[in-house]
Length: 506
Length: 112
Image (cartoon, rainbow over all chains, first blue to last red; front, side):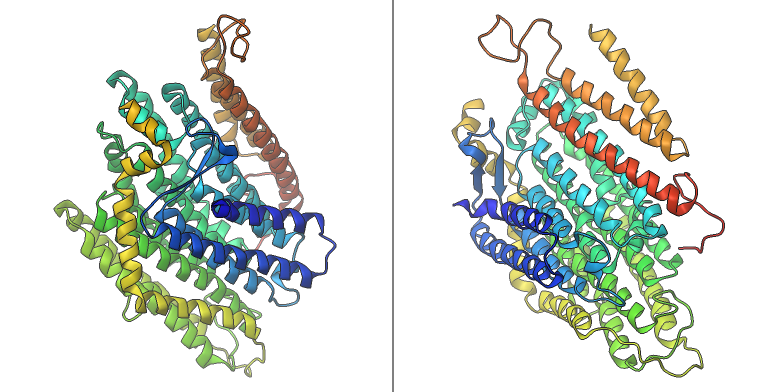
């Protein structure tokens, strides 16, 4: 019954404990952090099973009846996001215990506490059923991410961090303005109640709601890195420490989650507000996709390339979401799992290359010969095959499904060529990067530098996850299809949250 | 009163946006502060403007909506923390990058 609040309470408790007990030895901190992360995985999997029946679970905080109190709502989409967040966090925490001179988690203070607070924000954002609460959880995850981005210090991080913080503060201000408008018009903050009331609004009030929706698209576009708002991303993600960048792979997806939640639920009504928003989202998403591919060609380090690949995947996802149909939404959710995993793998892989090439790091320049070339090449090749979308790994299935799910002729004409050509460009960019990293070697004797076994092990396990995604594609696809059907039936969500009140209002 | 508040909001927002678009971190921080003031006032006025109306039911004939006041309180706390953080970050980047440009460009630095 109270299980639903655990994804918020566990990181809150452990984060607070790790902050207070900052004098603990690094071993104990790691133990607590890993314990908290694994506990969240267990809870998330139980919640996933609970949600997979198709029922909604509603948790009323303080037992205040919705829409007066804040509610947490668990549906298949939130359960899927919870599992993805917690699983990735375990990998990131495990990877952070490795390092070169010092491990990643010792490069600055409070690493594990910050990771837990970040998870608190992420988990809360996907569970909440209240708009203002969504804002609060966004702020929590952003505050933690500011500190994590700067973790380890250095000039590049300060520079990237300053921009990242400023653009997100502006985003938060816009978020509050949009919430103010929505509250002023509808008089509620509960998502389900707001959806009902927007439906009942007179036509004269709709332009205000439309403006608020457009503002929300800008806010979530900043988080998700939609084209005119993405310029903070490549530098910020490339500057962050590897395990943190890998965790940040989730952050753009939270923006996408918020877009799905708000525009498929709150703005779903007959007035066609969401379709007006999607008319903006569709071309911007396609432009993001194309722009990301061009940016990937211009990258000069593996971290930079990965950051641009994040943008490509955001473009693909948003273009699928903007089509507003069940097949493309289901395909997008499957692709979401795949791409989050793979971009995280690439951020960690860049750090592995840093281990093997102490001088040139992961920059695409001539470097010393390494003695583990087969291992390095194998890892890079597998990850590249998986990301670029070649069989047999999850990239192929997810991209194929996304292409297949396009139904409208206008979508065919634009989406297919742009997605296929940008995939080709990504393959070119990856082979350019791979040949520079693996084959462009100087005449010096082979270095003995090596990555820690644990670090390589984490990356191998994550790549194995990509294989699992394609082996168990059928059950996962069934799940995402049910999820998409559930998202496209917002009246069931409203009924689950408001109960009898929903019927009374109609 | 509505007109006055609307003009005030407009002036605050416009000055905030103007300052945010400046190149030096100090003006950007000031701009963010002004913008957050504007946002707080805006949120507050979304409960509609009343005079002599307490936010308690039954105390007077007319009562104000208490929820926006609670929201503003949250927004002020978050905004204050963020401003403090961005000030520290701006100071740190001045020290590390040896200039206060938001792009932090320094000719003697290696490219990223």
